[in-house]
Image (cartoon, rainbow, N blue to C red; front, side, top):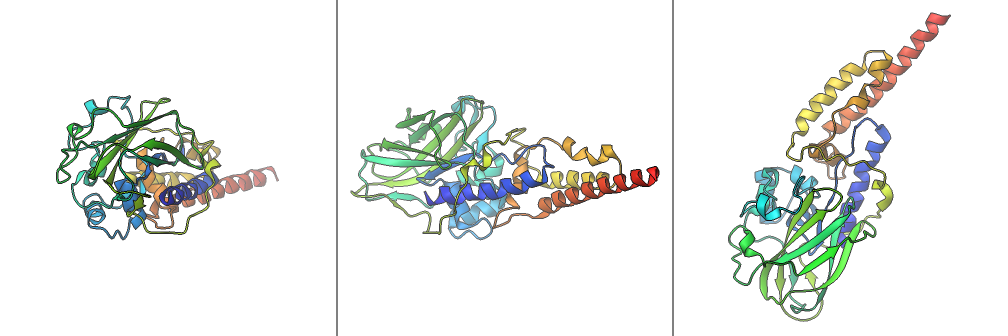
Length: 329
């Protein structure tokens, strides 16, 4: 729950400057991940992308950099269309087969939600953080009794059928919540979540490490107590989400394009002043610019370019108007 409130607030902060400038063809494509039991990517993000503490999160940043943590919400495949087992190779389930998130597949001592005081087979409330809600269904799988946590997760490590399915859930305060019966398990396991959209072939994936056993309430050992942010879930309601090429992960190139746009904006013509509308369609590489607006910033370069473009475009328009007035005097 705590991660969900934190993440949804961050999404609001990302959306605000984009809405103000109006210079980006499409906003950052924020979607979701399992918040409780917390997923690997969410737990590392909660530790802080720039200063993770746990061994596995430190390894993730060493191998993949900090950007995957700012993009915690898009461990996805654009054209999955329900063919998850066919398109995601064994050993790459947690990363959805994407190099950008490859460290999520590393076996090791990941922070876990310890269900140490909740008996297997009893009820548990799952909380899926949806930075942007979509129509679809969420499937919850669990590893088999013979799963070896010292090896990367394979499809054969999962039970053949999901132990719970949330079909066409309705998001409340930016979350999908569902109370379902836990499987009969004991000891360390992994819950694998698939969120398949029905308004698009896109799907999202997450791995949550858990430990079953005992009686009472679940204890989430993955995230420390933090002050919750206030959330405005309506902030994303009118956003047009153009997913583009999910394999495109080159925010530096986008910054270069922004620089070219800034130079073009200096020309005092009506055509040049309107040029920002022709900016390239945003894909998932655009998350780099979104991350720059967070409290714990990944890169401020893109944000500076966007601001520069806005100022230059405004100046070009003013200069053009002044010249027209001089011509009529």
